[in-house]
Structure formats: structure tokens, C-alpha cells
Image (cartoon, rainbow over all chains, first blue to last red; front, side):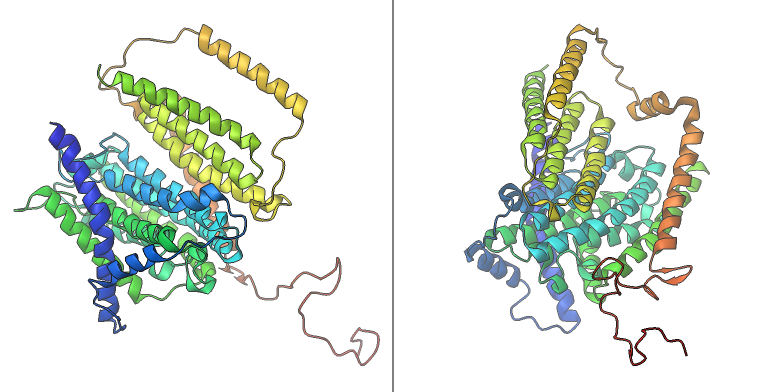
Length: 308
Length: 204
């Protein structure tokens, strides 16, 4: 009873939180290599050596930062990622946080991520981090709306806001086929909220590192780790909401979830290497003029399907 | 019930945290910090609502307040003479009036909490709270509210489409002028015009 409801799900959440970001960085290295970008080290070692290098660096201080925000923002971002991972159902019984509104709780994780990313850039009290923070808020508010519509579309066929019900509703047909617009839009939002690839605007090189420009040492390590962990949490929710979660033949449920998450991470790592970073103005236009109406079409699609 | 002691302790801790952060809103010296303290206070209240098994309302509090406080912080910094919200500034004004208003509202709310009779029947286990909340709030006007929501959203998208850079009327940057260096002065950073006819006006 306790083993099924508490210990196994929690162990899986922690495993995903530790192994997931490592897998993502390795996949990212493999994607970079497949595009012919030189890697100084083996892709398997380089995440670890970068982590130890960051751990050994001293922590920089800026002039009069907001001490609490400056210290807490990376940890808060990581804990939001952990909350996201805790919502992923690994099988019918193994769910760390099984509440009736887990889909809405994921939505609030996305909304609070905006606050935490702003806090990271704002609290340093330096120019470039501040510009990164404001840029992120201006863009982040437009991503969240897309994500909300896509997730409401997922809740409609399940007639429930619980992620376990969402998986159960995909017994006949996975949502990725039932609502073909949903998964691509959700993955774009995932890349945008963790600012990777084409949507790397908060931490981008044109701002000399943006929100993390003046962050160094272990604090920087936690921030980068949290960014990856957040994308792992996104892949977990994408697996649950669109790829049928634990559903699948032969293998046990948790293994299916892990395999699907890895596949989603591989796609995300590849996508973030294919496209160049877009400019903030074009990004806002793209979000509001193209992707938001598409997410609305997705919602209408889901609604009509639920009525039929 | 085994969980009830834990629930009581969590309730007390969250309530104290909500009050403390609510108090810090007025004691801090930056708009952004004040908004985020308010956000922390609301998150604690949302967690209390989860303890009271208002599953939807509690979680809705998190995301609504997350976005709301972020937008509020942004707009306050935009309209205040406090660049980026890190310069120290006073968070309170109208001291005597606000102290009086605070005491009066505390007494009224406290009296309500102590004197009102609250229902003590346990809710049925199969209560659909999201559905019943929706019916309680909107009732027969559900269709009107839902269509109003869709119209509002369409308006939002329409406004953004019209005001985006490449809108119906071409690029927003085309033909735009930078503001002058002094009020009513020449646009800053414009190429110098030929001034050989002295008057500054090209009459011929």
C-alpha cells in the first residue's frame, strides 16, 4: 500500500529528476554531433565535467542584489520542475501527487516559472540580466496561453482535470493522433519556457547570457540543471497528455513512460539544434498571430470531437 | 483520522506564513518585492484551500496569482519613477487612514469568523466540486459567460494581430520617427538636412 502509493512513485520522481537532465544533455551533445558541431569531450562525460567545473568555481557577487531572490531563484525553478515530475503518473497506481486537478497544477507550475525566471534576472541588479528578465516576461505571458488551450483540449475527452484520467481516456486512441496539433504546440511551449533552441531569448548570447549572465559557480549549476529538469518535466507531461502515458503492450507501465519521455527529449534536443534563435519581436508575432490561433483551432477540434 | 494533526499543523504554519508575507508587503522597499511577497501570501492561502479540499480553487489561486502578480509588478515598475524596481522606495502612504481602515476591517472579519455559524456537515464523497462551483458562480448564464469569454479572446487576438509589427497596414516601423531630444524638438538621430537656403524650409 505505502510501497505503491509513496515509495515507488517518489523514487521514480527523484530518479527522473537526476537522470533526466543528464540524458537531455547527452542527447543534446549527440544532436550537436549529428549536425557536425565539434565536441571537445565524449558526450557522456562532458555534462559531468561541466558540472564539476561549475561546482569548483567561486560565486560571483553583483552590486546590491536582492539577496533572497538571487539565492532562491535557481532552487525555486528546480522545485517547480520537481513538482511537475511529481504529477506524472507512472502507472495506474504509481502517482506521487494524485489530485483531481493535477492538470491545473501543471498549468500553475508553468505560470510560476515565469515569476521565478523573472526573479533570477531581476534580483541580480545588473543590466543584461534585467533585460533578459523583462524580455522573458513579455514573451512568457504569450506562451502560457497557448499551453493552457492545448491542455484544456486534453482535458475535454477525459472529462476530468486529473492526469490519470487523461491517460485512461487514451486507451482507444492516443491524443497525439486524436488532436494532431496538441503535441507540437505543447513541445514548442516547452522549448520556450525552458528557453532552448529557437526560443532561447531570456538566456541568449545576444544578452551575454541574459538572466544567468552574472551567475556563476554552484548557483549557475543549479540554474542550468533546473532548466534541463524543467524540460524533462515537460516531456513527462507531454507523454502523459498526448502519448498515452503508461499505456503500451509487453512492457510494464513505468518503463513505457520512461521510454516515451526519452523519445520526446530526443526530439526536443534535435529541434533545439535545427533552428536558429529567432528575434524577440518575431517571436511575439509568431506566438500571438500563428501559434495562439492554432491552439484555439486545436481546442475547437477537441470540443467538436467531444460533442460527437 | 491520522492525517488531521498534520493538517492542523500545516494549516497553522501556512496561516502564519500568509500573515507574515502579507505584512512584509508593506514593510519592503521595492514594488517588485512587494508583489512577490503578496504572491507568497496568496500561495500560502491557496495551499490552505487545498487543505480544506477545495482542490480546484486552491490550485487556480496558484496560477492566477502567479500571472497576476507578475503583470502587476511589471506595470508598477513601468508607471513608477523607480527604474527596475530595485531602488528603495516607501511602500505605504496615508498612514493614519490606512491604519484605521486596517483595524476596522480586521475587527469586522475577525468578528465574522468568530460569530458566524459555519456548516459542519461533511460533503458527499462523490461531489463534483468543479462542476458545482461553475454552476454556483454562473448558473443559467453559463452560455452567456462562455460566449463572452470567446469574444474577449477573439478581441485580444485581433488587437495583437492589428498592432503586431507586420499588421494589416504594413510594418509598424516604417515611417516612424524617434522622439525629440527636447520637447517639441527635432527627432533624435535623424540625418542632417541641407540647410543652404537659410530658412530651413524647402520652398522651391
